[in-house]
Image 1 (cartoon, helix red, strand yellow):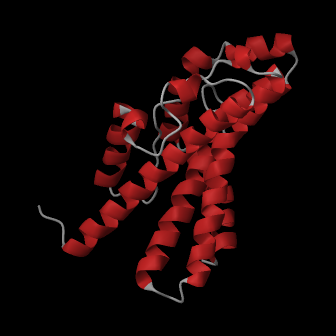
Image 2 (cartoon, one colour):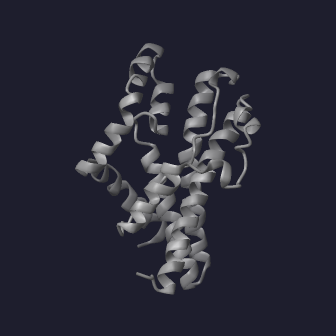
Amino acid sequence: MTLPFPQLIDLALRVVMLLFAVIIHEVAHGYVAWRFGDPTARFAGRLTLNPLPHLDLFGTILVPGLLLLSGSSVIFGWAKPVPVNPMNFRHVRAGELAVSAAGPLSNLALAVLFAGLLHLGGGNLGLVKLAYYGVSINLFLALFNLVPIPPLDGSHIVSALLPYRLARLYNYLEPFGFILILLLFYTGIMSLLLMPPYIFLRQLLLGF
């Protein structure tokens, strides 16, 4: 079945926005790591907006594709994680905290920027759609990544704040984290956790 042209444009806009959001997310991680003394991501060629080095078959293609095909109102995914070596940080704990927070904060910043674009757009339908997807996709990515389940960014933030022994115990969850995330989505618990702050922030930024 062939999609009408307006739906194809809408689909393309969502895909491009998601790709842009996850690339900025990973570049933010790598850039902050570099500023804290770890050039690993820079040497790996990951401090670039070129999408090719960031593509992940599962997170950048399959998951968003399945969500789009299912008609989901929320689309998200992830890029290939940038390589980071905390041993290169001048201050390990501060570096881990800053690098982990950089990704979600970059998406929140993008959401604010796209909301500003909406208010400057003067009611132009194209800009309204661009702003809506820019806000909604970036907000969902930021909130999802702040969930404190390994290997999401939220877990690294919590780990950096915990005493060393507790952090080690907490990090033992990482091999089971992806299974736990899938279970939370399957049972609807993840939606119960994410949708209230997502709707609140979206309405705050967009006004609807």
